[in-house]
Amino acid sequence: MNNILIVDDDARIRDVVRFALEDSGFRTTEASTGQDALKLFEETQADLVILDIGMPEMDGLEACKELRKSSTVPILFLTARDDEIDRILGFQLGGDDYVTKPFSPRELVLRIKAILARSADTKSPDEVTVFQDLRLDHSAHRCTLAEAEIQLTGIEFSVLSILAKAPSRVYARAQLIEQVYGHNTYLSGRTVDSHIRNIRQKARALGYPDLIQTVHGVGVKLGICQC
Amino acid sequence: MNNILIVDDDARIRDVVRFALEDSGFRTTEASTGQDALKLFEETQADLVILDIGMPEMDGLEACKELRKSSTVPILFLTARDDEIDRILGFQLGGDDYVTKPFSPRELVLRIKAILARSADTKSPDEVTVFQDLRLDHSAHRCTLAEAEIQLTGIEFSVLSILAKAPSRVYARAQLIEQVYGHNTYLSGRTVDSHIRNIRQKARALGYPDLIQTVHGVGVKLGICQC
DNA sequence: CACCGTTTTCAAGGCTCTATCACGAGGGAA
DNA sequence: TTCCCTCGTGATAGAGCCTTGAAAACGGTG
Image (cartoon, rainbow over all chains, first blue to last red):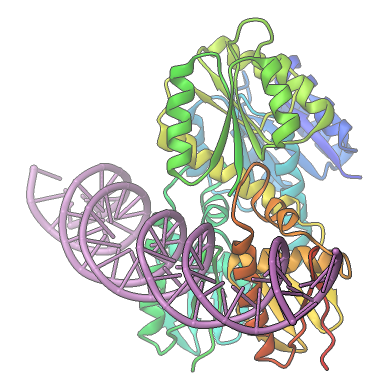
């Protein structure tokens, strides 16, 4: 099973996290400072790093920067305050995630499993998703439908990406919100409808009236088919 | 729809929560003490529990511990003070989220929907059920009968799933109602007939007049056989 | 600060689905 | 056969869900 490096200056937090992870079958390593973390990461080559933001001396974001110089290991941040979240978001971090304190150990484990599953998925960095006529270039943030380009906003692009990763699968609105915005955001389902409407409108202009299909009472799914 | 157990010693809070939830289509059960909560949970098998931390006698954390002995039901904590949050964290108990008082009912509902969507997401053991010509893809919410697709509504899909999980088994109407809607729902048995009629009608159109068979005086069962 | 694109929310309206009733057909027992 | 109960079907009102238009928040930029 995967090895996880836990970095936090608070021993109590480390205990909670270690306990939860080992309970789920992970192996763990612990560090209490950013420096130790870098050293231990060299040695253990952990599969994932849990990084507290608020540490004295070298904080989590500093440590992340250092780690990123030599590795693309998935990083999960622990944050205590909202302004720290803002800083994470300002930070460009690919497939990573964050959890705010206080957190439930159970959720932490779920998120870690999700990250690992995702990174196992993208080991061959699939920069481009293609499904039928739809093509999504993630690095360029470009979307084309049968050679014609569609200008999508950030959220629209995210929504479409998620749908395209598992076409035919039906997503409930709450699931989309969780995947687009992260786990502790709470928006009205109508908001998703709005974005979907905008995507539909743009797709319709290119002759794809059914790019996104509604499954009444369940959710939405990708449905292309230019008919 | 899902059934939610609300546990708080303050009747006013319970009212607010119940009102918000029922407004969103949830069914609710209420308990004012930890002991009652455990008893009611046994009976109702709620899909999610809202647990106030600060209750006399058995407090929310105690109750959570007890619940966790027999169930992994999602739990959302209500907390009044920050030091209670610390205790959630200190405790090694899987809550799924928490909300601090005072809270907005709207946010509460959205969080609950997010939690339920998440847990529905993670517990998908059997993605596809197949029995003879019938194929049910749960994630895509797709039903096919010998390659031909049938458009089913949410309830129709549920009914057929239940029947297909244990083909040849005969289900009484009351059993179907319980499995589709959850405990303590009271509907006319005619309602089930309605849905079964609709399924039959759609199946008949594809040449399967006996997809669902009636066992007079007992109930219904899956019976495919294209004859 | 004003402007503009994006995101989010709100309310109205239409449409689908759901639950129930009423009535007649059919099965089973005496 | 007769009676009773169960089941199937048509019709229907109401609930719930989705779409759409409009406008309010938000954020970045000149």
